[in-house]
Length: 263
Image (cartoon, rainbow, N blue to C red; front, side, top):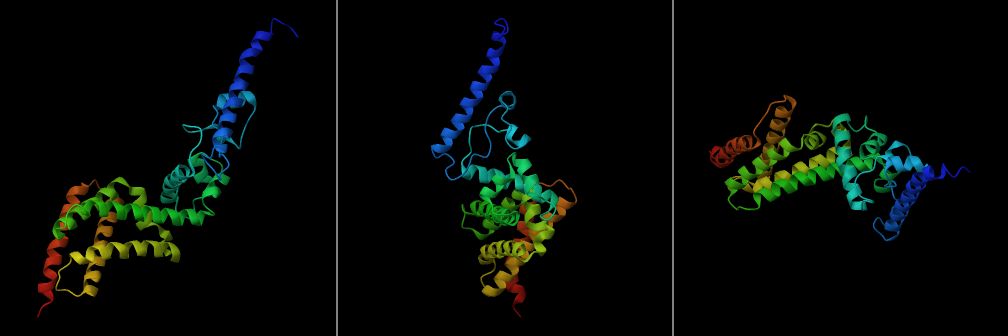
């Protein structure tokens, strides 16, 4: 071996040593229980170093890591749900594939199946996740007051702010053609019933409980229809102003229901 060429090998050797150290750190983090119960879904090593060592992983996704060594199962699941939302809302359930979602998350497809048994299971959990987020948003907004009129306004404003900020989530929950699927539609219907049951007590006291729920369902439908209209037309809207306007419209109607029904 030519001793004059030996120094040129040193950077290559050092690069390989650094890569192997990174691999060991990932393994040690796994063994320490950071991601207990899950095989690491990618080696968190710079792509250039991987090329030098010859560790290829499973396709290009393994060479495009995010920050950090490993993600906890909870964080990974959250990331999958967030990326799946964009894929499903833009392509629909039937046209979206687990491969596309894996590409969006930048993991291999087997990693998705560590968290979700199937595409259907992922979609169902995503529907629940979006619906729960909307309910939590509105519930938090109305929690600070016991005045029915103010609750109505706060709830409407919070709802339209959510719609304004989360178009993808609204599309998944209310505009998806997959609502014809009995199980998917049932999840959305359960959300609508829950929303109506929260609104019903705000309606005129001299109306029967059954009628209160019926009118509350109408208010939920009104908010949903208005949201669909402003989104589908591409119209810019002020969620606070729109929420207050519809709240005033709803409140005026709600308070007059009892007198209108009396002979």
